[in-house]
Length: 446
Image 1 (cartoon, rainbow, N blue to C red):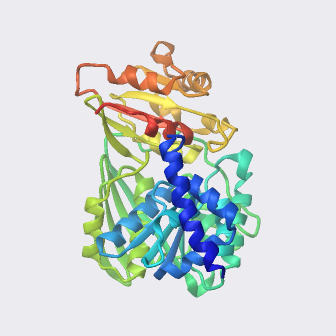
Image 2: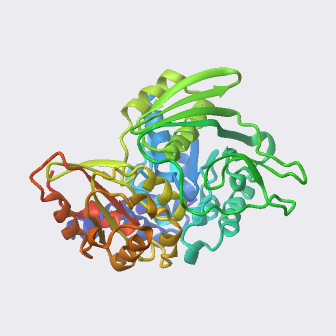
């Protein structure tokens, strides 16, 4: 190992970060990492030496940021030192960035919790093998970049195959994820029953895909929660959803969920202050891993009670005196689940970009359940680079044309919905990824 280059990299990273912040050119989530990897491509190989206990990675098309954020917060609440790419920069440059800025020769962490892009996971493992991998789900996402689901699953499987000591925490309810199991090194989590006690419509108008068993025949479902998530089986070969090591019942309320987890014939009850079934899945994944790491129910619940959403994942803000909720949308299943939870009495902005990080292909808008918004009480503002495309989608979803307002400037769109003197009016903002980055850079008046 080249210690000189490694330590020089730490100095270079801090200089690069300081420079870019002074120039106000970026949020600084990847630039220092990019500079470090260009100077010393094997930088990440050294970083595992600074983790005393376990290295944890989280991947999947949806829920990576929330799940890794929950895991990190649970560990930190239990007084562990954690290094975590909390801002969601999950390619190699983003991972290198957080290590380069946080490490120092005399400083070590108990755990690393790294959110990884699916396509970059195998590259990450070339340098930093992991002790645990949590896989959340596999939904269609950025078809122009990833291709179909089999391609995305292949990226993750390749990473698993090159990391023989890896322990897997897999979503049993997703047949594509469950198929990645590797015997005794696999722990499954999943829901047995889902009950809704909420004001929003929990059914979906979005089309459901058909998934085939390994034998080639279509899977059938005895319970289907959303998308391909549920209790599946093959009537031909007998394959079925694996038994969950952490099986749970969930009651979904408007603002929180109650999760009753069964593990080794012992029941544990948790309250999670996040909206939607999709976030209940994220929480269950984090709970399962936390138990595997030796934490107890009280430690986990204490962290769940104090967890605050980050970076547009059911993020709550105050904008010009109005309560606002910001929810990232980026693919059909994720968007459809978010749309179920939207307050139809709020002022709504949908900001869609088609930059590289968003995916150039925006056909996912037509597979997302925007029909959930047809009874919105106030105008819906479409914004971003593809504001016109979004407006057209809302028209076909049944939203009256006189309620659709097109304002490409995201800043001006936010000004429109926050100008009311009636501070009880709420705001919902649904941005794509780079639109979310734009919002986070804006100096919004509280």
